[in-house]
Length: 103
Image (cartoon, rainbow, N blue to C red):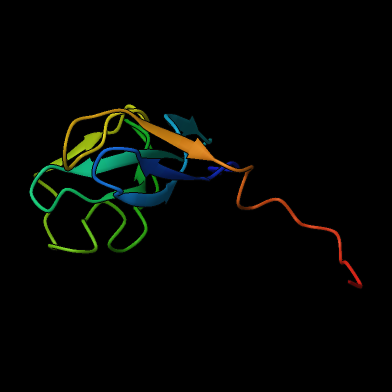
């Protein structure tokens, strides 16, 4: 899941992150690009679907920087969490395999 991830850069404050966009649903879990409103960091989190009978992955819905789950909100993929200006994705999918080059 979360097959596509891109590098995002804010043109105003130069904040950078690598994340997917939106929510991708699987049979038991969904992955979402979320922002922690406390420490203002963007990351991807896996959470169980409503009514799912499987346990969530350990530490799946906890911010890796501040350790809190109560400040997480789905990120729109455009707004910089630091300065609220527009961010843009640069380059292609970071998970794409690149061909080997000899030069």
